[in-house]
Length: 479
Image (cartoon, rainbow, N blue to C red; front, side, top):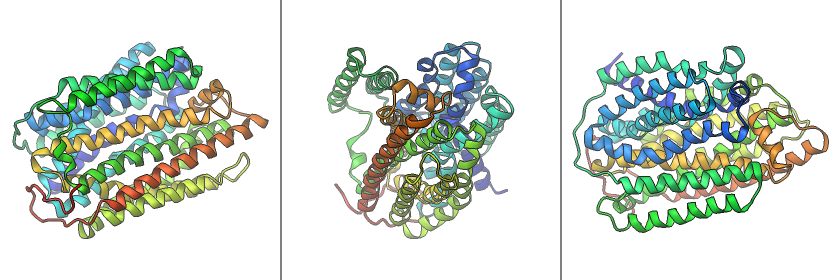
């Protein structure tokens, strides 16, 4: 195995661990809720705290990688994540598990925020597509794969092992990272602690209010949280325009390709990951399938994506990101249309076919779009660009989660929708039919959001990949 192959292996394993654990808890949530004797309104934060910490932390941890070298932050992230995983598996109470999930998420944020920059440091732009083809398996595709693993491990081994399994893998990845990732150069930069704190506070307020709405309805208490989130967001924007080193330097938006690629990732995550949640609600709530059988129906897409990702990454190296990324989004839209055929009694083969198209679309979009971000980022902002890309994708994932429950809860009582999502309730008769209306509405909205991502991806413009590894690109088009 060549040095480059070992470097790719270290990146893939580390990124895969963090992304998988973003969603691996979903199908294990009913078992965890019962065993730890927790109400659903509390146990749901096992998922949310992970997404929230990653969404807030990735941008600044990418910048910290610029300051202290990306190898240090990336390797430390693997260590933190592995320790957090062991603690999660040993949790005694639901409070323990939520706290340890936050630790685990901090490690995942350190990994995700620096992985793209490490690729940019070690591979020239005309070869990054292939590498991002491999690491794309570990990003959003890994988040969906977590659903499958969660169902299998919970059914046959036990929920604690969805965390314990990371320990030996993490040790292996840590050793590989120390040996094969180059230290790189330190880049003088400054952290934006106030901006990070305000962003985290805003997302926490909005998430808490939105999740409470899905379970308790819209009341003054929840409205106050949403209002507080909006106010803090306004303060965040105001302060960020006046600090010397803002969370997001405005020159990162000078490149049309870079800007449109990042926002295409946001809308793709916001629109498409909601589809995954909705399909799980359908399989468990309406069709009454177990976590294991639900995961089997979603498996083909992950297999296809893993096989095709590197191949479409190579294609991106030759022709640029615009065509593969846009085509991938369109194919994802096709998969949404396929899922929209589902009824209370339709054949489950529809889910298999939809999953197959999902795998093709994701294998085209992720490596192409990730490669476009790093290929068009100034070299002194590699860490920031990599972190911002993951921040936007993870904020989209967090929004997707809330959106899936919120829309579905319109058609049936909120408590029922909440239980169906958590896998502890099955719908029957007329209620099942009503819930299908909510599912179809959710899919329609997801498709519209994906079409926004298609427009952004198509509008990014044509790019030219250069062969040398260190350069500050002159954007082909500026905003």
